[in-house]
Amino acid sequence: NVGDDMTSTGLELRPGLHRVQAPLGERFVALYLLVGPKATLLVDTGIRESITETLLPYLAATGLGPITWAINTHCDFDHTGGNGALKAASPETQLLVHELDRRLTEDLQALIDVRYGEFRDADGFDDAPETTEYLRSVSDLVAVDRTVVGGEVLDLGDREVTILHVPGHSPGHMSIHIRSDGKEGLLTGDAAHHPVQMTHLDWSSTADSAKA
Image 1 (cartoon, rainbow, N blue to C red):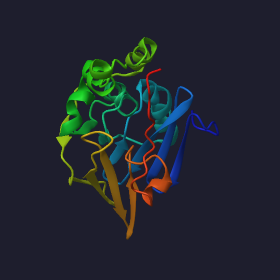
Image 2: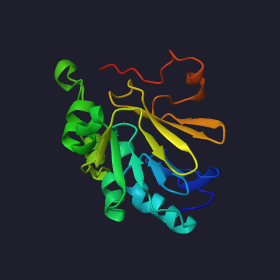
Image 3: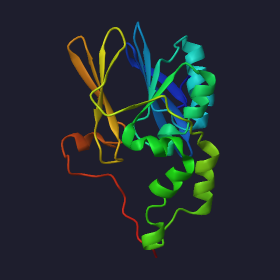
Image 4: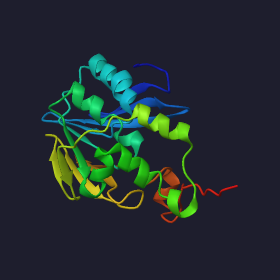
């Protein structure tokens, strides 16, 4: 799974920052590894197969690991569905999530009802049964090890990584601020989906739906 296939590949963007891209149906999900001399941080876990079929082979091929912490930027299944597979492969890894997203990160039925069924009762609009079945089939949610609120700093040994609370996409959405050697970077999660949103803060990529 390490190679030129753009649906399933890993790439070191700069020293100690790896982007691991895993298939997600017709699209993909990106996981990020921040590797320091003291600790390694994984940002998001994708779905179950993101871990078993992409991340773990990438770690084996590159010799990276172990993973000290894994942060779920928010509660959506394509950012948390690999939590169980990660803990099974690496029990020592600590799972971190914002306290406001904890319930939906640990409880799949609550995620389906609250997150994806929010229009079911009021508007009679719900996901198709096959969509819900797919979500169940690829998600492996487990108890997290620690909740955060924003402002926490993780020490990787050669850089400061600060957890930022940026609610909007979900109540507990987080972004990861990286500071190293006088340079800064930001892993936004789903707070932004396109670079243009960095200059047009009021632009949203959210689609509107209407019942036929």
